[in-house]
Length: 295
Image (cartoon, rainbow, N blue to C red; front, side):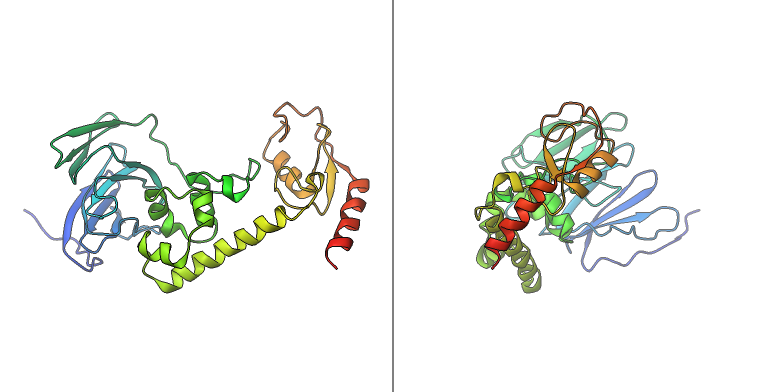
């Protein structure tokens, strides 16, 4: 005997594929988003839907443990790619780009972490993952921040998440946007190259980029290097001397140490002590410099 126990009606267009893990159901459709549901009550997960595809999604599948989800679509710009996600978050783990024509199918092995992808290029690619662990995009607070122009693609992804623009992570990754390219984005390139159609979203991205440019100008406007914290890369307000002999912004260094970092941010050697001493001489020098340059 078979009976209907639930009906889901969240998609806005034809549903192309459904996939089960031990605890989740994934559905994909011509409407582009992938939706994830809990099998316990068929409620949609908080981070669902996944909106990284810009065209109809044709297939999705789970790894054996259900921690990883793979999908592909007919995106014009990435129609040869497969996107691999962490199902515990909404973050992209990998974008696979081996195929030379449209991807037509994908499937995980039942007991080992292998993914097979088939394509109109007449090939099947076998992908092996080192570890099946969640990979959450976040700001790396335990590492010194870089100048924006030196950011990697992952740094840009972290920045997008911090600016509440996580829905754009996939698009930026697919277009290989690093820090230098981020600073050069314009209204036209966002719309024409990245295919971001929402004017409000474009405006928000441009506003955040302008804030980065302003910060870059501040950092390069002649501030003496010794006034800039090696961790935050910003002008210090409350400098302290650490046991490695270098000066840091007090709050930044306290955060560094609180995360059980007993190594120097500058030398990577073990700190002899975690005692921080106020650098009053440096603070007075910074205050004098500010009085001169902010008039």
